[in-house]
Length: 454
Image 1: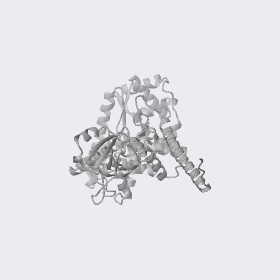
Image 2: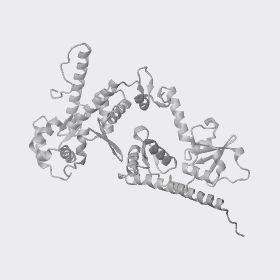
Image 3: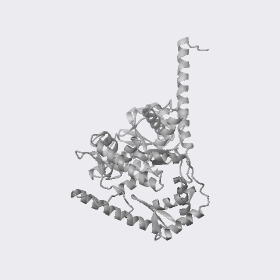
Image 4: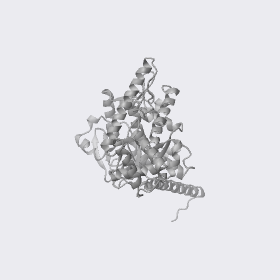
């Protein structure tokens, strides 16, 4: 016998089929889109293919601006890609990176398995877990807690699932989140359980312990736990995370302007020494060394740089595995390839060596740059001179040492870094003297920006 659907039932059936097809296609397209971003990224030998999360977001918006019109759409897409195992998120804060899962982590994303949300609450006390469960949990960190009373009588447990018991709870343990999703798809009654990641539970326990010992502090804004040394202090001595501090009234407009001014000052010094494109992490370290009182920790350095970028006083260039910053006036050099690295720099290198021999084996890099510009037409641009210094370093002809006040050039690394150490100490002494004179109402006798007299 043939059972024929009515017209209404037939329309409903077709609509359901089309809806299911649309969902399956969406999952496949999303996975392919995210994977293409990472597969297009440069791969360093011996490393996994990974990119900064911010870089992935930038590339997604460039590839499909209509799909990602705003930040919310982008964040939702990335969160879903991480949750479903298309990519794996690593590191914390501004250093978050995304990578493709390894073969052991990959799941069949295109199959459209329904996801189950992770919970931050463990339904039992950690002390109630058996020693056997605690031993296995290292390899099977995803735990699905289901009350025994909800397990259908006579039902077989899903295959390849490790099951433990803790009082009234059955514990289904998995190595990957996608494994848990696949099992829930095969046995929908498991959706009544609580899925937790044991690693996140341990992390929260560690944070609570750190808070008790003063290593962690609660942010006065978002009430989340953060490492104490990374917190920022407001006017009322309340501690904030960087995000909450920027949106609070604790950071005055004068302080913001001052922070931007100092970031630009540091980049100006670097640009004068042909360091026109600077690694963001290196910039923050130099800021911490040069202004230790105004910039108390790494969070303040990050805050300063982010503010300078937001106000367009500084430009950020996202690369697959690093962040580069520069002044707007230096951006034009990004398209200038300079000279080829295998170019013959014999004349230029000999010229610099003669200069160093006649100046106690070291010189300020700015003085070397001035001499090169006036002697060689080919050395008129920063990219060309950068290639020269790189070539000299590889040949062991002369070396550069970089500090928070200046760069020095020496015939050996000892010459370069020895001179840099002496100059840095003298500049720090001048800064301390200047500050003491200002505190006593006396006019400063030296200019901290004038390094020539040092």
